Image (cartoon, rainbow, N blue to C red; front, side):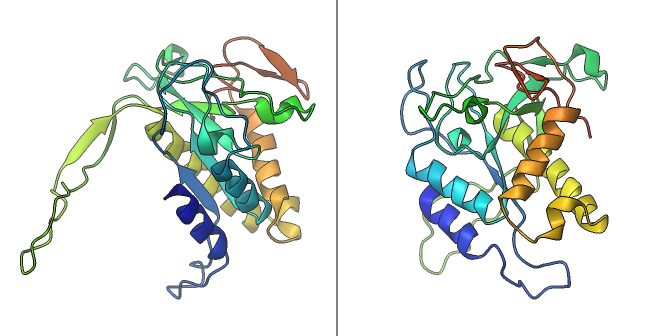
Length: 239
């Protein structure tokens, strides 16, 4: 389950995996989960779910949590993506070009803001935080699953690729860029690495993304002098 998976990550976030000097712990959590209920404009989560609370715990432990916003084209932010500390990601159609000027938000990408949790802090309602390309992304194809009879060979993944679109495709791109940002932060001993792992790491990454993403769509709200748009968030990641 999602809860069990998140708890495992928290329990093992500082584990030594024994492979090499760099294989210690977990730094980034990239999440994309299906919904348990039907989409709808009144179906947005306010960040109080058990899944969202575990995401917040993971962030407090020093992990940077990144979550797909969903693909219903609704004002809906659910489950892990609604967590106060989640970096929630929407997706763009890049028109299959390297020209960023023709990139636009997909009509299927869910949008915000998240439902108000009543704490008088609008900061944690700003979902999505950023967006990234998520159209026709090529990836390795998973193996078909079925029941395995005793003594038979296990199913194996086919040597093939598939192309998919959605926030499940854009979220790993953001997670990968954040991993590079953390590596640079460690090498340069930036301030958010000086005091070990804690919520300040996630806060620092969110601040960088807020200030240095490519703003799009006009301001729905303004936060710390930066324009936030209900579909683009603080903009397109710019790595």
